[in-house]
Length: 145
Length: 98
Figure: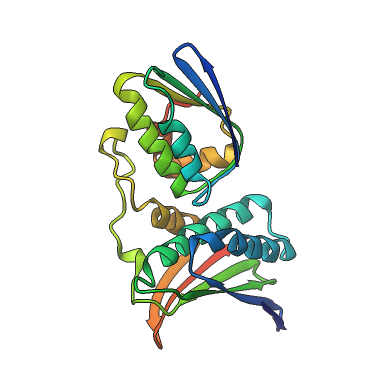
């Protein structure tokens, strides 16, 4: 893990294996970083929820032929009180945000199990964007805390 | 996450404490699927459940569908943060919450 201070922005990053077994470590890293930023518990829980959803997507789909890593960058703009997370992987190009949203008004019998993770993520974060650059899937998200 | 199961006649009460996430959700799924066939009513006491992710929601949805075929399922003691997630995802309308 590396930490640096840059003009009022605290930045940390760490690389994890893209496997669901690493989830506890990933969330531990995020929780500790948010605590350092003085993030309220409710926002911390929301951000961890989004991190879980997006990380699990990477763990399940990014590396179909083998193993790979995910790197998480966390920065905090102290002036604006905005947390930025950037999740990157070198897996197959895949934009999870393009999936069709579930219809959350349907009754239980008609609800499909999938799509909720991304739906929750989009609704929870102030912004959530995807790009593919230099062989990397990059998800960038912001939340004011 | 810890699970505690109590049985009364044809009712089962499952107490859930901790996080219901990608890692722990399969344990709850297993516990629900292992309930005997004569369990008609399922109560999930989630007083100690402080966090739920979509993996947990999927297990609840599957359990709801299963139990409502010939019985009932309800959740009690839902904490505010988890209620927020239910509201966001439409699960407030799907689940029976007391």
